[in-house]
Image 1 (cartoon, rainbow, N blue to C red):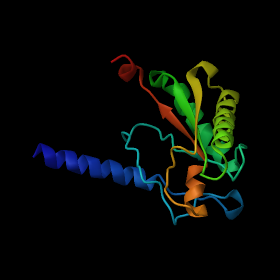
Image 2 (cartoon, one colour):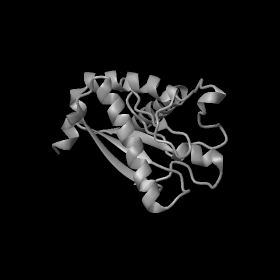
Image 3 (spheres, one colour):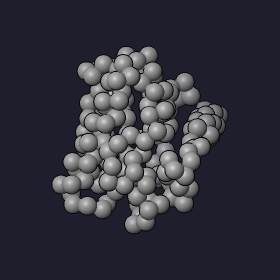
Image 4 (cartoon, rainbow, N blue to C red):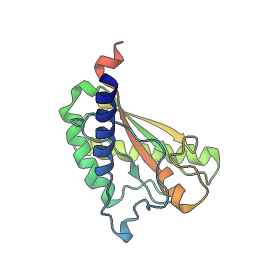
Length: 165
């Protein structure tokens, strides 16, 4: 019985997460296409605000208009949840370019997100940046459909409760 309840709860969370993944971006605001999708799905409690990735255009570390709008919501969530502790902003790139170039580009992307969140009122001490370059792709593949998902910054929270364990 418990296993059945847990299975139903897990499926409910996955369904809720899938509903929140719809995008209404226009063609000029290049959003990731539907041909390739990230393999891992983060499951968060329904009450937890989403910290979905912020996507970037090729070879750019400039926040797109759609990213700015979503970061405004994330800034509010971070400010309302001091229990999240430090939020890590992780910069990622697609596989094109040298390792050194992509590490630097990933850092610039993470820093662009951090700077914007600070401008929105999040205290800088709550944010840290890290770059992974091309080493942690969200989607495997060698096409634009995959690369679009790999050009991103992700925000990862660590609750103070789990940090003290």
